[in-house]
Length: 367
Image (cartoon, rainbow, N blue to C red):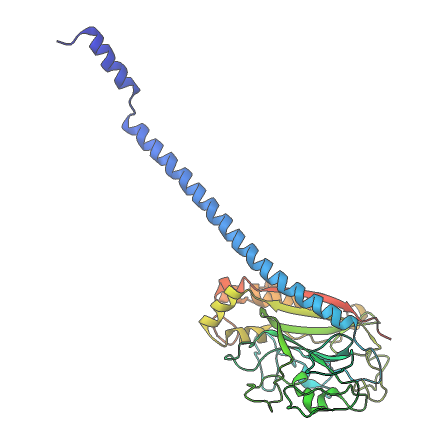
């Protein structure tokens, strides 16, 4: 027999229970909240990962520019010593990439990234004994072979020099040499051949691209380009004023001018983080080299712009970013969008997104 009080208790219990509809709504709301939190965490992780990649490339670029700032600030700026720098076709052409760019790739006898070598009053590697405070400093992106651990990394050489004379008999890979004065030039001194050559396999001590004084400065820098800001305000790939010196064909002919017309050197590098590089190398061992070849050289040209030139500050850097990420104004699809270089080798878009371009100008305070 059900009493009135028992029925009332049962009714109250029924009123406190959830209906099926309420349970479904609750599950839906909880699921939605979980999805939103998951999406938020995923976005935060992606942002953090990208930030870490940028921190890595930023750190490498900063270390490169800080080192170059020290070397260039102490450069011997004289007209009686040689500079191995890029210039017109009849002067140190092997120090220049020779005009490769998007759609052209790395052509025959093209080196790719630039090279530079000069004397600087900074410490350098030296086997033993007394030596001068002057070193032969050189920068290059190693382009020997993909099996070399230093392949497509920025290298720096600081070779300590004798005060005078060669008093030891060493192999080319470690030999030192006294500072030379013109007309003797850096590229004709045999023990310094690695300062002006690049691209060999470094299979032995006699190889003219090998030198144990080279050290890896930045493993993520795979492209290195420089150009000149002249005292007349123009940007150029020739280290003198062609209007003021129309007959000049080199830094020494017909007049020894050194870098007297150069106000500053602009340096641009492309840097990739280790994870991005591993992805590109896994896709194809030649992809990173082909990608570097797609990044234009700096080439000055006459035009109708300011100072009768078509090149201006930031133009080459913008072109590099167009190659990497796409630029409709230049008709470049960008490797991020195409997933490949102009040579057809694959580049994972996520790896390409990790590449960053950096530039800095170094005031030479020349004569």
